Image (cartoon, rainbow, N blue to C red; front, top):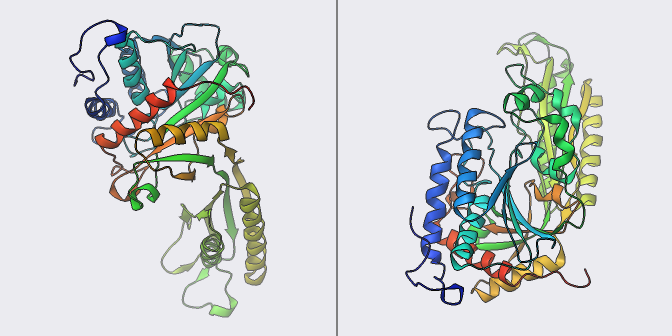
Length: 431
């Protein structure tokens, strides 16, 4: 690894300054090292409680200890590094992100928010510098919800909102979450002990790649997140009547796939008309379909997101009404199953201002933008004020994709802003 300090020697007053250029390179190197912990060589897949997940957790713990932190693991599998402050009873400044991935995903989604603060804390440790408050870096064990179809498990454990019913969820091999946890030495009965109380966390700051093209298109390295968008997700099953592709006239068909296609086009039209609203049909299936058969059944996913809950709710209502209209006209039966709902979460105004100040002091023109993706911060927000710092993605802003990337220069600049934020951090007397 590259040294992240200059060669100045001495006590804390003349301790080596952090070499941010080297730190940016170091973060990128560690991202590559962590990416070696994958379930399939050459493909970035690291799901909850697999051997790859265990290896990544162990590596993160090593880096935390080397940076001068004490390390513990809670009952959900979160890896937590603590950099003690001068007042151990003070509320914690928490930071971090997740280290699980989607299947065939990217290297930076999550790990950046773990490795960057570890590198910064290593610099303070080398300087012998402590703050009035302790800093905890949380490597959240599970955010994506891939293996057991239950997202945000690590942050839910810390927020005290872990739903024990998901312990019975099974993976593709029929293994329950409970069984997987026990096999890893984690005791589900101890999950309540992972919860932290309101007031114990002064603030939570997450550094994360944008996962979108906005900063890249505007040639900006960093952005301050205003809110994490709410999300409504559904599975829509349409049942019509299967028939011969050559003998049933077009006017007499009850084609489930065409009804689905009409719904999908309406979702695109409806969401394109409202800035800040997005709609996605990520799955579209004709079960047991054949090239010469009118589809009698079709299934599609619907994902509606917006930073404002009212905007999202209005769109969902319109889409459901349109589904009813389309299906009535076409003679189709619709079954709509809501699979997930999350309200939008606002980042604390005072923390947004502190991040903005830190950006300005480091030569960045402030840019505020919402996050369309979900994050652990939206769960931590139930017990503490939160903030997010976005870092520009390269390669068109693509994420959840092997082509996901960012630069060492942007990692270095984000580190500067993070250090400035922490070194000037205090909780206002009135929030």
